[in-house]
Image (cartoon, rainbow, N blue to C red):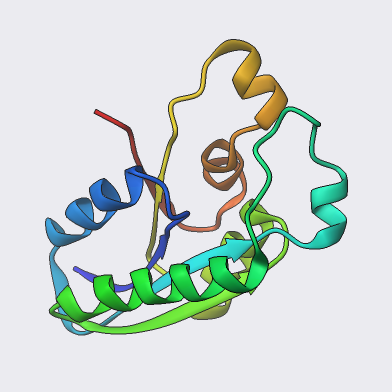
Length: 141
């Protein structure tokens, strides 16, 4: 049984599938789920390739994401917390997993292939490689 699970959500369409995967897990009675979202820092935005989608207004985006995470949180049958942080997505997901000593990280994969994967990188691949716990990668349909 799982005691602590970090769920990394990016606000994309895959987030719904990630939450569905979470619903299929068996938790201990004292389990905790941490729903997190990582916002890019202005410094990391400067390093993004010019053809990578740029985030919208930071204030609008923050409140939109927070509200979405709260809606997911209300549906959970276990104790939960929200973490909205800023930084490199893979590094912050791993940092939060270490802080909370999670048994599992659940993250979505956008299913990028070829040049898109090379240009945009893969947060899920980096998390799988570097995390100290198991990682469940939810793929798009």
